[in-house]
Image 1 (cartoon, rainbow, N blue to C red):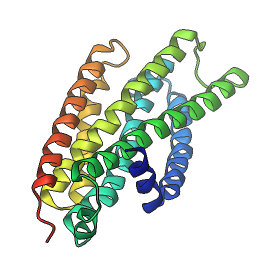
Image 2: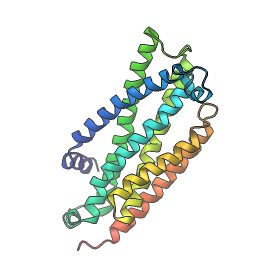
Image 3: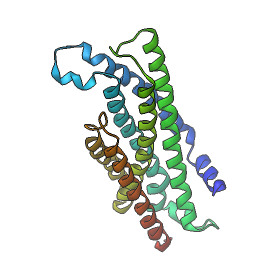
Length: 237
């Protein structure tokens, strides 16, 4: 399996997606500063209270961060899976002296691990830079505590798993429709639904996000099993 995963990394030029993840990290770093600064535009505007405090900033940043990495993962699935199993490349793919299911699983593992690891590293970089600048010249009118840092770590881990799972579901929808745009649009819609479920309650309770993550995982597992069966039954021609 490891050999197949290394082959996928070489075949699809993983450096391209590493650069994309780096660009997303820089964009999201700008977003977290924007979120921190928004309440200063008009302190009396009740609508801007959504951005007040580290708790709210972490919650809003987390769901948007998850969305962009879910979309990145869905783009990878269009290249690693949709293009290869719905076009002429499938003939060459099925000629490999390896079980079809094993090749498919290696693709899913590569993208899932890539999504979770890069999202975690991205979050560490962003929170480290933001946290350091807040200790030197704070924008948020609140003291950063260990509780906030713990909350940020826990939220990031859960959302990284959710991003990987939702992108698998989006890939499944795109695979059935044999459509690259459908895969990406599905990732956006699924992320939006996920965000709407958890955004309003992240600051008060972890239960909704945990339940949503579990549902996303179960959905991802179901899609992987369904597609593996479908791929095993496909005709090479």
